[in-house]
Amino acid sequence: MTRTHKAERQTRSADSSLQRDAESLRGQARKLDEDHDLVTGIFDRLEERVVGGTGIAVEPLPLDHAGNIHLAFAAQIKDLWAEWSLRPETSGELTRAQMERLVCRTWLRDGEMLAQQLLGKVPNFKHLHKVPFSLELLEPDYLPWSYNDEASGICQGITRDAWRRVLDYNLLKRHPGSALGFSLSADTKFVSADRMLHIAYRKRIGQNRGQPLLHAVLTRLADIKDYEESERVAARISAALAMFIKKGSTEDYVVAPTTAGKDGQATGARSIPIAPGMVFDGLLPGEDVGMIESNRPSQFVESFRNGQLRAVAAGTRIGYSTATRSYTGTYSAQRQELVESQLGYDLLQHEFIDYWSRKVYRAFVEMALVSGVLVPPGDVNMSSVYSAVYQGPVMPWINPVHEANAWDALVKGGFADEAEVARARGRNPQELKRSREAEVKSNREKGLVFSSDAYHQFYGRVTLNADLSSDKKKA
Image (tube, rainbow, N blue to C red; front, side):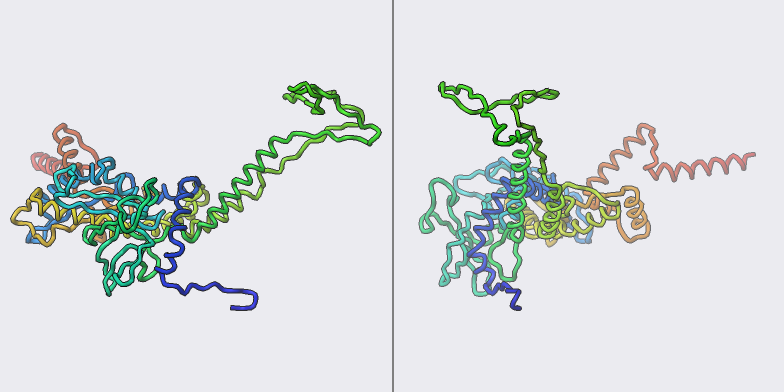
């Protein structure tokens, strides 16, 4: 630190720092998501790139004792998973894809998201599907920051043991923002850690709770919002001002004729109607008309705003072009930005899968087995029943021809397989094979031959060559 630079330091623990600031950060992020179109667009795009319209796709991969994928059992799991995905949460209002998008948005905006797992029979609740497993979605407000008891190991509503392993969560029964209010002593319930899902955006080791993704750019976003509002107001005022009348010398000054107001009292107001193409000859002696030049909006608005948005994009794992919806520049520059921003999306996507999707799927399979709804065949390796591939949105292809040729070369060279290519395009390999099988079978039955049917191309040439050889021998 020098005399001209007074450095700020952070010496508090992660929990102590968040204890003071987290609720304020969460409230600011929510308000910006409600009122600021730029922030709403950022979270909309993060939903699209992290979870996507169809949610995180899960491809079951149970194995038999020989180590091969047990396709029949995998199809059985997938059918049950598809049925459960229609109404996975307690209210029955959201599909799995809708639920995952809301969970992702809450996680990134508020810093964390909670869900209680309802397993098996639950008093006063009926599951909406065959597998007795449902999720109760809870905003992080249900986990009170103010609930701290060092003697009991409770920190910010979470009970941990001496090794910092989570034992249970101390949840409020009602939202603290509801009209009824709450009391920690009377309205708190304890839920064991094995029945809770807690997805948190953490930045430090040992951090107990999560913090909003926008934590480092909240001030900048608020300033951009205020600046744009000021420029809009200035532009409206500037546009409303058209002209002014310049008076001459004092001896030429003539008091404007008075007009009667609504109350019959005389006023000094002077009204000059303005219309396109009008000719006005009502100036008094010594008067002249001057035009007001508008300098709003400022010519520097766009460059200043874009510079600020570059900093916002750098602090939110999102591409600058994506944040501004301005896609300019060369093909190489656009591709480089897409590739770099995709790394950020992939990181968030893997965190979402680790914190949420994998835990939900494994709990679903476990309850399906325990309840007897899912009965594995005898040749299934039971240690592999939870195996699956999780697939989120993939990076879109900028140049499909070049990228398709690259994948084709990799598959032919043995450096990739067909399943990897299908997943890179967001397709389930098994579903793709079934679709292609049905398509090719239908084409052959109808006598249709397309370039995609390699079987007909190869054996058609073999048959043709054999017929030609036979004809030559006969000749």
